[in-house]
Image 1 (tube, rainbow, N blue to C red):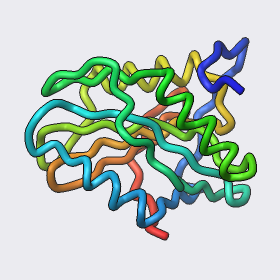
Image 2 (cartoon, rainbow, N blue to C red):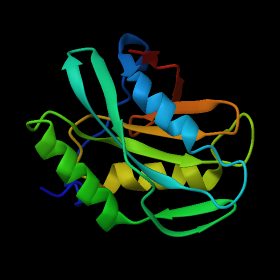
Image 3 (cartoon, one colour):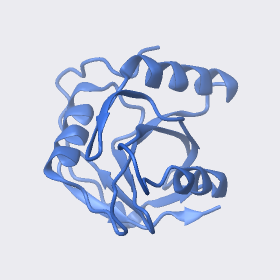
Length: 163
């Protein structure tokens, strides 16, 4: 299975994000917080999870850093490492968990996405074979976490429910 292959001719409509429920497992939040960038270079990786029902999605796993190149304020994800994590998690979950999005760190207390962050998610959305009609972006700040959902049209900030 390849999660980063070109999609063909998909028409994209904005989702009603307010009608959806996004959950995140407590251990995912703990792991993301452990990656907070108090010093050093940005880290980045992927998120996996599953569709619980028609309106509920759950982030269940966070990869360790999958870094190809990074600086204090930039991280290029290693696609080979990310795909290996996604593939292994898919197998370990009996084919229930798949790629849901991306995470990376920012060296600031309350992170907000840069233009580069948004462009990266838009590019991944356009060029990836996705199991869900969206991609999640999580940014780990030194004090807080930021989550948004990109549906091919809009970025929507969300507050996932801890489970």
